[in-house]
Image (tube, rainbow, N blue to C red; front, side, top):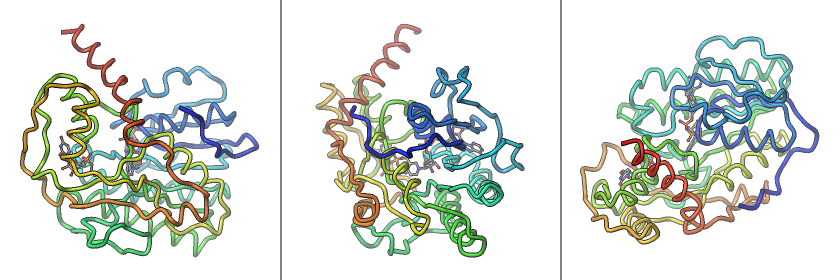
Length: 329
Ligand code: NAD
Ligand code: UDP
């Protein structure tokens, strides 16, 4: 995969909270490869040390086992903070909803205080979930969303919305150098195979010739961004002027129904799987498609990797995991 053209020049001391997760692991690797000093802070709730294993012994890399809802340990001088700490898959963030909410709110406060102390730039990984089950499409940053405050997804959606408010208020009242990325569904090698998300489920099911589980009638849509494109967007947003403190959508605007995705995965894998429809989860959004005109205008950013290309990069990763499991059985 061609490396992105976005990077920050001088080596920086960068804290990646949630750096052992899917996005965080890729980000730690990218920042480290760009010559930065990287501290990965993670409680390993959904993260895996295997995502950062080969960095662990390097003097420019440090792993700190810590939960961001607790006061942060002394970490030395920090110049940039990426807050990626929060389980992203519905299955995982719903397992302990109160902890998910605390992670988003108490964790954000702790990291924002650290940013204030160090005059560091801080980027929040927000989400398309702040739009809830949107009544408009595509979703632009000016849309305020349609979110249930008391459903199974609320701990995540409302936690992320509250975190955006905290980022806004720390910026307004204390001049903290905040950025907010509203990330849409992202996929790629390194995803946790048991996260229950649609790409991991469909690919693993197709590789096993098992039934592909489409929830509901499969007409709900999502827009899938390949991991390298997301990293380019996050790094470009971090490098942007401090005046860019309002939320920016980062996602691939090409929209698929889950029926179309199931078909595409089945064909790309060359699988004999049948499609099986199961109940639609409560509050499952019916559509998701980002308006990325702000990212294009302010960052010159747009995704480069099509879903066909991204799946071709991702399937071999799951195939290797699948092969390892078959050998172990
Ligand atoms: P992930 O679950 O793979 O990674 C999250 C990481 O945060 C894990 O390493 C986990 O152990 C860690 N973590 C969770 N709670 C923590 C806590 N209280 N203290 C310290 N560490 C904690 O998820 P991901 O897909 O890598 O997502 C990263 C971020 O991007 C999340 O904040 C997520 O909300 C956001 N996001 C992701 C997507 C996506 O499609 N992957 C979409 C929108 C937003
Ligand atoms: N989904 C599905 N089958 C699965 C897993 C998910 O049809 O095995 C659907 C899910 O109902 C949702 C979409 O795929 O409509 C995306 O789900 P995911 O959990 O990946 O992300 P999110 O719902 O948070 O966008």
